[in-house]
Length: 239
Image 1 (cartoon, rainbow, N blue to C red):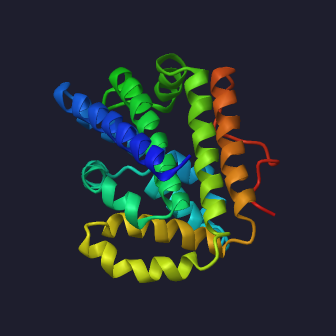
Image 2 (cartoon, rainbow, N blue to C red):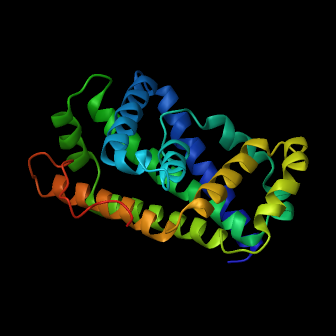
């Protein structure tokens, strides 16, 4: 996909994300419910992938994945800034970098929609059992499978970024101009993603580990298994 098509896709996905977040603000209690849900999910992800966070080889990438891509903090302003400077992005960034950003926003758009569906059911005060039931009834296996496919695709994009010659030097040179152009947060996102993946010995295995674990969790929930977040030993970290 060329840069023009990527820019159009990015713009469309940003509108979807903004629409979902705006709708939530007009529903009584939704903002608080979504915040409670995001905090719960962020804590659960940190438990499931605690070994990746503790491993020096994967810790940086794990924090990037779990905090930048699916953290509990509000990303509304980031998306507003991103939408404002899409033409600048198209000019300044490589096709590969623009593709990675677009993949992140596509994932964000779907995750926001799924979060809203669950938050409407759960409210602000819920148990693990209630969360599991809402996951199974408010969202579908097809939607969750698509979400994991997008995680895989984004991870693959980051793995490809680290193969580009001189990209590290390019990102360093871009830092000051990016800040002036209003791209400071975006540059930080790209630089952190690139840097943390570049440092890992096996970045593709890292992505595979996260996706495999989350797919196992999904399968456990939809199969109605007890303790769906307890995974077998064969879902270990990168070797």
